[in-house]
Length: 274
Ligand SMILES: [Zn+2]
View 1 (spheres, helix red, strand yellow):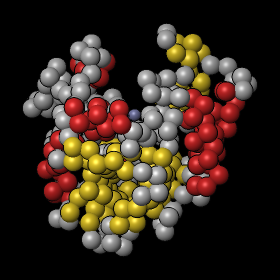
View 2 (spheres, rainbow, N blue to C red):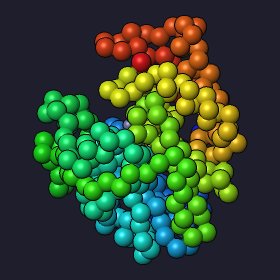
View 3 (cartoon, rainbow, N blue to C red):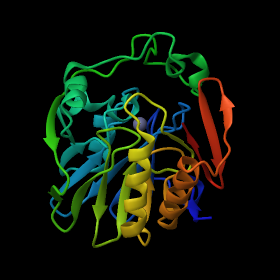
View 4 (spheres, rainbow, N blue to C red):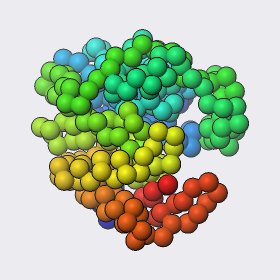
């Protein structure tokens, strides 16, 4: 199984914040973790000599703008890995965000949206937070934000570091990864992480997901993966394992367990939900 690095193995930065925990994931890479909601989402601040890129703004429960101000004095470019609520909730604080050019996803973020009242993400059970509350999950929403469309192959020049946009549809049609080819780092968003991979959502397409991961496995198996949920760092070999898993599922060689409205296929270190 591909090696995983957990937060407990990374240096915790001495930053006081009620909601976020910041870890040094690599030189110039800070993982911004939200441990108090079951989504366990991770955003990344990637620092170059001239400017920084913030990959995702988190759930919008904590004050991401204030936090980032404590991490850097440089200009910060906000880029979303995709438009799902747990990665875009803090966009409004930054005024504008980059998103893969998919018109309906862009329209969603520009109008803002909220989850249905009964959604499990809004429930008390979603939280592991015991401190004093400044937020209310009942009124919580993704507030509107201006969107700047980006495209496959676009480059973010941060000075001594360049990040390249890779379109990775499957989990979401607007999903991207960012590659730092010099350092062999791949920031994977929700398409690849060491937990249940969601291929059953509205906008998810299993065949497209399989083709995306197969292409990634060919090119990036030697890279280090920085993932957007649960545990932060995974060996690139995981791309091969996930690609193989999708090919077994789609060719009928894998038996899943039917759980309510979807089927779960379990593998070593991750699962796939269809
Ligand atoms: Zn997502």
